[in-house]
Image (cartoon, rainbow, N blue to C red; front, side, top):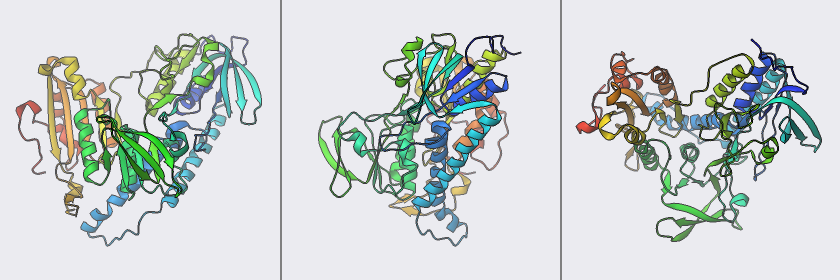
Length: 500
């Protein structure tokens, strides 16, 4: 059932989508499939370091895709010692940064081309231009050449995403790079400082350390804010034991380029106020992101935005202007995750043009942090569960274990086992007042994304601890731990695994 508003107006297009990232592309294609006349605008302003990229948005170009490929490169390097214990006569001759970057960028280029081709095949008009509102039904589209075109539409979807923030200190923009730049660096990064305690900072530090680079992380306060505190501490502890240097309570206050081409970083201790200098070849800032809405001239269309972060407050992806919508990272108080943007965009378009009723559910969204010891989670952290239900109503089941694939490797580095006993961890958080419904799922170990995804279905269906207990595990796997959990935190019993 097509919407009666489709084509029943005097504007050039039924729908203009601002932004060619995951959410924008999904929404544009879905709308065109339903018969809407759609144009999608996408334009990437170069980073301060000069990096730009093609159609597809953050995830494809400078986010999830290159991040996981570099993470995989690190995993492969760390697997050499495993392979030897399994009888393989292998020898590492080191890592070729340029070869990896070239292969990754070639793959991304093929994806960029594929997106353009798909838009054409789906009857979505594509324009490489920067859109800005003139009024509630009109935008200007400015191309790289400077040519400006005026476009009118019945409806708009804002899906322009976000970009990394820079520290407001001397030399930050001149000396530092961000996740916009690191995946296409033409030369090896060398000795690197990652600034920030975000998952982007820890993931970047993790794969750089695994690739053999001297890597440090400057943390101002708590790591992985918003995630489970206990898990965050485990991840940082593991990374630290395996070669990543953590500078706690530290905030850079100045960056300078030295005559030798290094970057001198002045670091301030946030507790004592003292300062010290350190030199690095590369500094990666991962201190947060902001929505790129400032240049959209939203005020001309009457669209409100949060002045603190540029994000757009919405109810079910609808802004305060009824025919203007927003999806993805521009949404205020919503997860900045590619699958969230895609699903929200598709469901929104179905409601607009096809009488759909399904709304995006932002609860129990699974995610994975691709640090060296991966972390998958669904639902509440332990702290949030206690805050929400009260400590007496929260039961925490836990288990420490070592994957079977690790057991043959007894190699040590500086007294630390390459494959530690009981480094991996499974935790379920239940609400005792609701028949032990599972409200939090946390897994630390290899293959976290693959382990976590399936349990997300169970939790969306309201799984209880008894459902996990009644499920037969697949042996021998790490995932089966969640079907065997019996030790609770409050019992005080040792949760370390002692056999298969």
